[in-house]
Length: 421
Image (cartoon, rainbow, N blue to C red; front, side, top):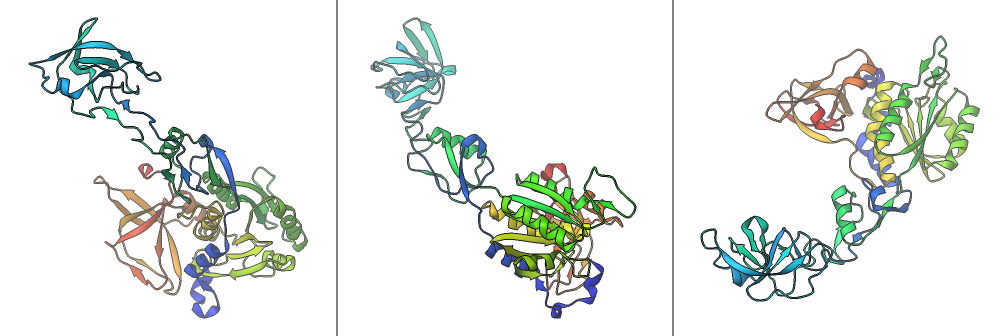
């Protein structure tokens, strides 16, 4: 938490973390919809129900390579007492058998082929042996419907494959394709302007002068945005009201949201909020009882959300992950928390620095041999090392003074795959 935290209590006018989150959620709406081919829709959020156009399969089909038969003809068949049937022909996937399976007859069939008229079962090929060009020996019975996928057995025309607001996963898209669907309505992903503010801030790759530092915050946010498929533009401006206003006005028309980094606290050199005030934005909150990250501000400018994040690396990261990123994802119709949460046993006590605040602590999440997780605080004097090396975050909610060693607590994972722990 920033050093000022211990000097500030709930009487300062700061709002609580949950209140800030609720204000973001209630003021952020999806930016629009689009239709995409199924193969480009994976991971997107459905903006409308995905409804099957046709049934699949449209006819009864075989689930096995083998022989289509009348079940009554093979009711007594066994390895010791095989039944001999007359071979009436064959049928392959994509074709239909023109005739009918007669009593005492069989048709060689491939998996996926339409069941011939007269047949009501399929005997798998490993239980069959052709003993002549005209005959087959059946060594197993097959009850009615055995190895047959009925018409509409996978999906029926009119079925809802994915509800509005559901995530389009690969399996659903394959089912949609089988049901005659070629494209899906999805929420459009937003485009975001990321603006670093400060005389001391230099874009990576540019020459670094004495007293300056590279804009690591911007790169970290860019990486998170890219990992969620969100397009962005990035720029750096000086501590000048005129420069900040010009950059904001330049970026606004081409994006759906704006993120600023730095200049959000309130000193004479923190100009971002004043610049936005001069441009007519509607501030919804500034300062949150959250540590790190209390300096965040949020508002709407021409109905587009603007998140003003503090410049300190730890505060910037936490304000982004806990408030800005969930808000940006909601622009794409995605209401899930961006970070996966797992339950882990706490290895040592964690004490809140201020019970009226919500605190997030860098943590080390470890998978144990039995598959369970343990978690402990990550300790480093380097803020950037903590951002790079901590793989989890533990929350001490407002009103919770201490988490005790041995408690099972929720932990936000900072790695995309838990197998990487």
